[in-house]
Length: 365
Image (cartoon, rainbow, N blue to C red; front, top):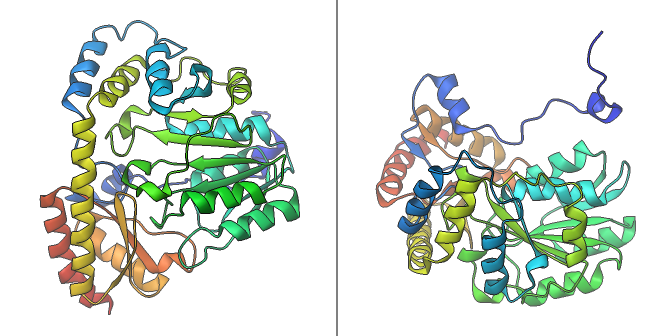
């Protein structure tokens, strides 16, 4: 007697895409002192968002607006697209799962990068898609390789993050256009733009929500500082949104998150200040690494990859930092795993990280 799990679920091994910092605290029996591993914003949320969210709590006994009308209207105006071309989700992670559900049946080919964002892989495995992975090239996603693989296997879905997670590198809009032109005509590109606020202008693909082969995803988790509120959105062809309405959780984006996101969009000065502080922090990390004889990976995100030279040394350094209650992460696949990935924290957090890194780095050399 017991639950009748599907064959797909029975075959899947246990997996946790990310070990949360809270689990590390429970395991160690101590609180983390420097939390610079999850690419969260260290700079809080907009004061306008805070006020709006506090006011929304007063009506949290009501269901949220399942259409997200106010927020979608403003987002559509911001991006110069139609209302129906904006769809909300509980973060990009939920939207990724929904897109896989829409487009991937068991055995269908899906292409992504070897070592790329693990949550996408988690969803593809959960729907029994057939994953094909293309290695990174010079620490960047190999767009030509991805397009070639998509054509070779007849991919239904192709996933690219620009700027990239976990390396922080980026491609130009021109290079992305080349990818779109080269991939199969019936393949859909998911362009994950979670870090787009930190990217240079040349990395931003002009908006075109009329192309049914391209779906763009953005989030309020990074520059807007609302990771715990779980809210993101998708920009794509209206037919994709209509299909999404057939399967999405219509009450999945809560009232408080919608209010905060709407208010944060109206506080451009706050977001601009976060981006500027992140730029300052990235420069500090590059200078710190140079002082210690380490190379860094050029980043257009809110984190920097520090090259430790080899995966075993990077893991040893990450463990040594954790012993000092400093939380960082690292890519999980070679050769990317030669790096540790450090989120830009506050000035105080950056100073604390630098002090501990200077102390423990000699131990792993």
